[in-house]
Length: 130
Image 1 (cartoon, rainbow, N blue to C red):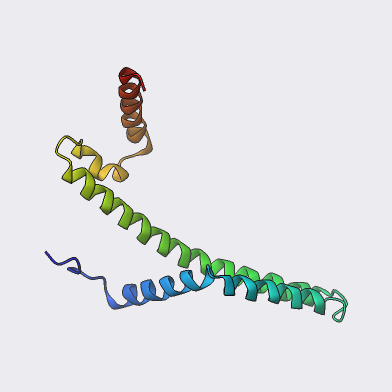
Image 2 (image 1 turned 180 degrees about the vertical axis):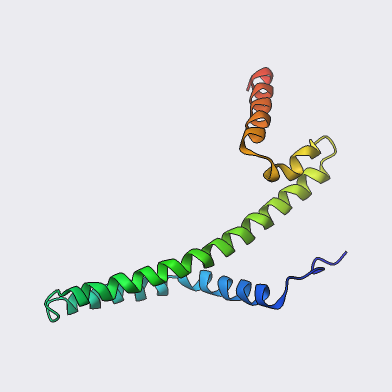
């Protein structure tokens, strides 16, 4: 079976590629330095601009727009990472003969259902004396 079967459509794939690149770039030391320098320049311009409302509006608007867009980029990357981890864990559970295969799709259960299973494992741990 090919791991690339049923690839998502063009727009989804494009967004995934862009989101991955932006996530890597925004988490880099260079991005942090650039952001810090931008804030320093903005602060230095404050006295020249008389600390006006427009001066404040520039940084507020810029950071709001960047934050708004980054929410979607970060969520895409987090969803992809979570799904990959779940699939790896599913493979490990499926490969272990004595494992409880009902745990393979546990992320699809409700929080209450997960709490019931958690209690089962806590009870099991208590009985083993751990």
